[in-house]
Image (tube, rainbow, N blue to C red; front, side, top):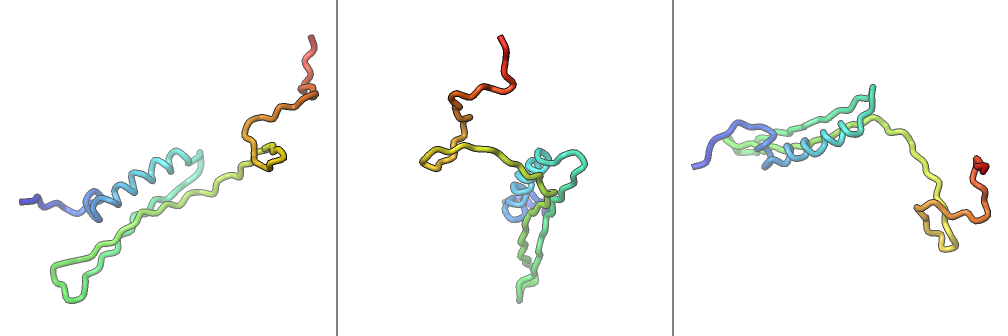
Length: 102
């Protein structure tokens, strides 16, 4: 005989909402900067199917709203093959700045 449990995030929708929540909140905390605010929303839609007196259907989802991120940019070199190179290019015949005197 199975144990009767009260409804919570760990067991509604086979625990999927709990897993979604536990995945999303660390992402928010790690990306949130000082003074920023984010929102995690757990939505449950509960519906009683037509003709049912003892059953309900529960659909849930976890959504997040993050503050807009700052734009980031990078400068990348490419050769004749037009492929982006991610290592600093070797510059032959270029004196590094500031020039170091010996």
